[in-house]
Length: 494
Image 1 (cartoon, rainbow, N blue to C red):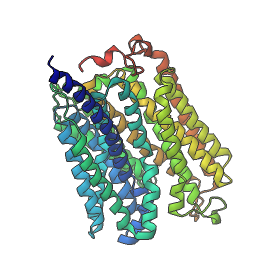
Image 2: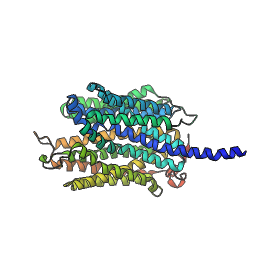
Image 3: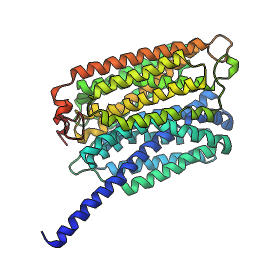
Image 4: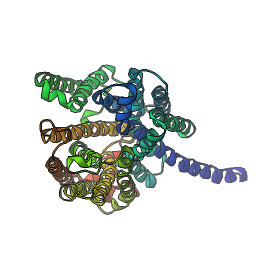
């Protein structure tokens, strides 16, 4: 080795470390932005209704359509992200999100606002791609912790965007709130342009277009039925017909995925006990987690005239989410360290039990705002820990090349679970609303909380069952240093 080469080698190593340091905040920022922007519809529903002179049900679609487009786009982006054009996929997706954000700001009719919100929702599929980048380009001792935090910030993004959007809407109007989305998505695009590396060589990914369309149809029906609660009470026959159609479409998709050589999602890998158990836990647990989040925010905004509630404004109600975001982030930082001593499935079970404790707290003590904040904090800590532990359980049996695809499927499951949790909360509260009354009885919230306790108990048992079934290959003892639970099976095909 010449003196010049010896001199260049440390500089090259330093450059790699510098790029890794820049990559981590970029991954976090992009995951946070797409989650926060997709959640902008939540605090702005009333403002949309008054600004565009539409009903609240119609305005609700500014949130629903973002979740729908995100659920449909996620598996497609996950497959594209597993191939050689991951950087181009990330940039193109962020460009779509930026254009959608511009449509929400421009003085256009309501239909264009929905188009813009749908485009913003597509960005939700980027979270799994950020995990794939972290696993491919960060040292093993850092990738697990970074992936866990990416999962957490994708959850707490709503807690960050909600109060900011509500504040801007209150003082600057609807367009100012959506303008925040345009600003941060444009910054995210520039960040990705400067920091996203190319995928490793030798990757290939083919999108099964027919399978993607069938999956999209099934998911659209499932999420539509979960969001349109009134359809079940007013047009039961139509709802049942659509539900049967959704089941048939998803069954057709599963069969086609098993037969094709280029599946959108590796269904055989999804059937692995660890992956299947984790997705079941995510589905049931996600339903419960989102249920409690919606119960607390709705309860906080209920006026005193209902006999309970605190009558908080949209902005102040958004501040109630701060304990959720802060403690969720704290849990996300702690979980990778805890995983050095506790297996991933046990962490899932423990996290679900913590969320169950939040439900118990809300069911028994909500007479003052401090108790409500405490329940929100417990929920945030449980959700943060659950979200941080989930990727490790799945990626322990997933090749590096399939990281984006495997996690994208998990996020589809999460979206469906969230929608189901929202629907369950709405149905329980609607059943507890007396004829002619605008707000449900206080006892309806207790009933909904008990439903959540049951959901989290099921999730806890699923985590415990998964811990008992873990194979010797995924035992943390055999994992590489710094990646708890990452066994040999995860290195095949990488």
